Length: 246
Image (tube, rainbow, N blue to C red; front, side, top):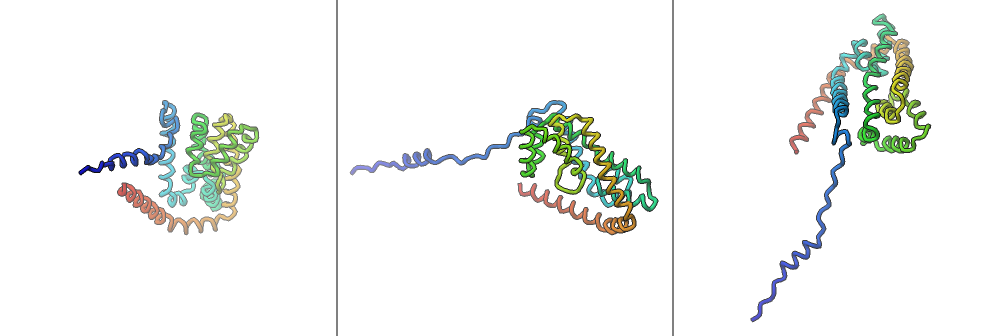
């Protein structure tokens, strides 16, 4: 009686050889300033993290800031703080031009850091900042690659819109200005002029409708703290839930 040769092992081996290995998704490469940072890169990254922490800390303080216009204009400096400052100036609670100058300080305080990041880190920083904004990312990348004089005009022309409500990221514009090697003194002076114009207009609106604005501020202030605390609670809960899943 002859034994039947067992070719099962060979058959399995052929399948194992013929079956392609599952494709592994390549890890995204870190920017050079993160993978191989120099001393200046570390300083800038620490400043970037500090700005992020500062912005987060401002969120629960919004309710308090609405009733402290001088601190609001100095610490934030946005168009909303200008409106609130103008409304308070209209009822004698502060001086118009002091609020306006404080909004300049508050709005321009981080501009030098973003300009220097763009100057030193270049397109890698722009791509990292706009990774979740594909349309803006394509627009900026195409414009930077062309290196035309039109790009300089676009960057400078869009700066005022960065201080208005809307999708124009003022911080990225200043970083692109650094990337394009537009002189820092020119960009700083232009940012100050834009802030004076935009916040001056907003402050005038607040001054013109002072009582109505303050009434709205009081209503918002009544509920904003509780809404903010609820949002912070939800964010902490979701973060802990994601950590628990891991």
